[in-house]
Image (cartoon, rainbow, N blue to C red; front, side):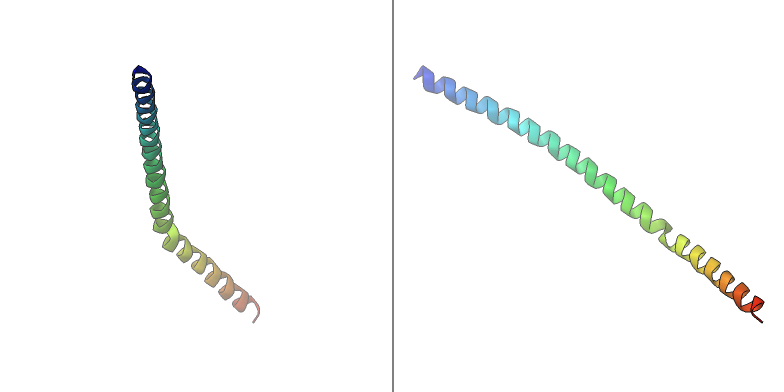
Amino acid sequence: MPDEACRLAKVEQRMDALEEVFEDRGKKLDAIIHALDEMKTEQTRYKGFIGGIVFTVGALFSFIAWWTSK
């Protein structure tokens, strides 16, 4: 009987250790997901601004090219 109790105790210790590892990995995964969400919102925030600048520069270049070709 003591041998079985010892084995059971070892299995319980390993399960506790694995639960701690999975908990740590879950926290790290949550942090990574949060960072990716922040990056996504930051990227979409400037998307319209940069698109507007590109459109304006392109329109100016087209106007200048049209004007100089006359």
